[in-house]
Image (cartoon, rainbow, N blue to C red; front, side):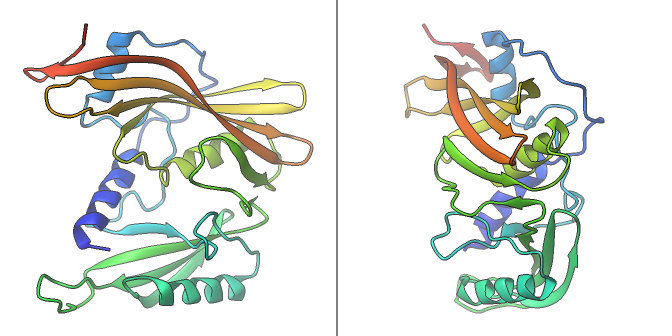
Length: 263
C-alpha cells in the first residue's frame, strides 16, 4: 500500500471521527430537503452529524492506519476472547501484509484487542526508510461481536451477532457507528446525514441516513442519492441484519462553487 493511500484512508477516518457534541436522543426520521442534502454532501469539511462515534485514535498526530484482522478471504473480521490468540492472529496477518510493521505494543478494551506496529514505506527508489507512522491492528472480542460469515462487500444481508449485553439501541448504535469508519464507497463520496434509532417488538434498529455523490464525468451532472442503511438487531439472540434502502435520487452540480440541482 502506498503512503499516499494510507494518508487518504486515515484522512477519511480521522475526519469521520472528528470530536463532536455528546450523543443526542433518538432522532426523528425527518427526510431532509434536497437543498439540505446538497449543502452537506458538497461540504468538503462535513462527514458525520453531531454526536457521532469518536474513535479513541482520532487524536493521534500525523498519518496512521486503523485496521481489523480478517479471515483469509478478507470477507469478515476475526474475533477471539483470548489475548494470546489475538496476538497470534495479528502476527500471522502482519506477515501477509504488503508492509510488515514492527511490534510496538498492545492493549485491549471491551470491544477489541489492539496491536501497535511501527510502519515504514518504500520511497520512489524502492528503499525502505525508518519507521514513518504507526499502524493499529485490531481483533474484535467475540464477547462483543462475532462477524464470522459476514460479506463486507454487500450492503444488504447478515451483519453479524452482537454478544454485548444489554442488546439494546445504545449497543447497536455503538457498533454501527464504529463500523462506519471502515465502510468505503469508492469512487462515490459518502456522508452521514443522520444517525437514529427505532424499535418494534423483539427488535431494535439503527439507521445511517447517507448522502452519496457519484460523478458521471466532465460535462455531466453528478448523481446524488439519499439512502437509509438500516441495521436490525434481534434482541433475543443478537443477530444483526442490514438493508440498503434508496430513498431519493436526483442530479446536481457545482456552479462557481455553489451546489444546485440539475434540470
